[in-house]
Amino acid sequence: MILKSSQSSFDARKDLFKVTRTNIKKVPFVELFNGRLQGVVSSRSSDKLVYTAFFEAGTLNYYCSTNNNRRCAGLFDHPCSHLYHLLRKGVHAYGVEAVAQYLNVAGKVAKIKNIDDFPIRSGKIKKKSASEIFSRFLNYLRYLELESSSQPIPEMSWFI
Image 1 (cartoon, helix red, strand yellow):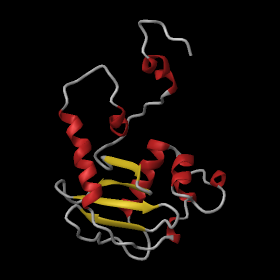
Image 2 (cartoon, one colour; image 1 turned 90 degrees about the vertical axis):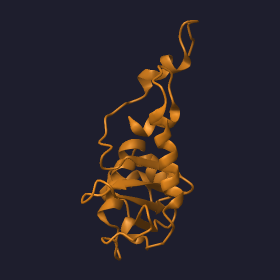
Image 3 (cartoon, one colour; image 1 turned 30 degrees about the vertical axis):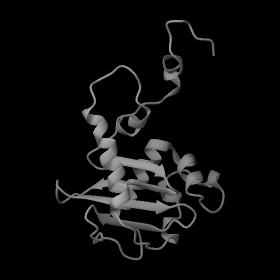
Image 4 (cartoon, one colour; image 1 turned 60 degrees about the vertical axis):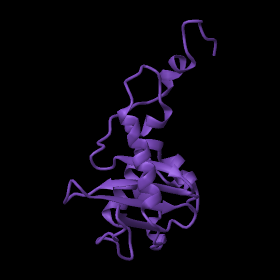
């Protein structure tokens, strides 16, 4: 790629990026980090309550709890609706193949075409504190307070 002196590498590559609008009210934060697909999912019953949820790579173990570590009432021997929303948002943000590879899904990644193909029921409940995920979410929120800029902020790609 040859750049003109007035062109940044970001400007030259911007056509390669597919930007789609998402509803951040449902899942305001999702990331592939620390061997997990993890994020924050809004509560349907209360505007003041959010859930932190994750799927662990390799085992597909999962957990969902409020930001103050109360276990999700819908979490039994199978993932709750918050975990399904998280997976759906992760696939929307990163793509089916990237999420499947990151989670080390057993079998052929090529067989996974949508979220229904993920073997998430093979995982077990694995209780973990919500603090790490929620802390990372709060760290990302600080970017909302930045003055607007025409320069790209890579960490904000989940917000688009």
